[in-house]
Image (cartoon, rainbow, N blue to C red; front, side, top):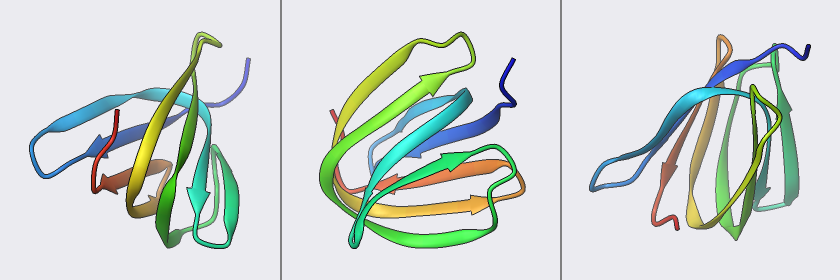
Length: 85
């Protein structure tokens, strides 16, 4: 079983997602970036694109992100999204 980490996605209106996941692929300004458990600390800006989330049960979700910021710190990934659907 893959190690998991906490993913929190927040917009200006509400918390959109708050759960344990095993991986995400996010649209960074310089290209897509993948995040797994125990990733090094990171802060980066995000651009418009597809956010792919694999949860701890292996289910894959896709969301459309229109910019924001991503922070990785102590096995928690926080995404501050301009808008997400």
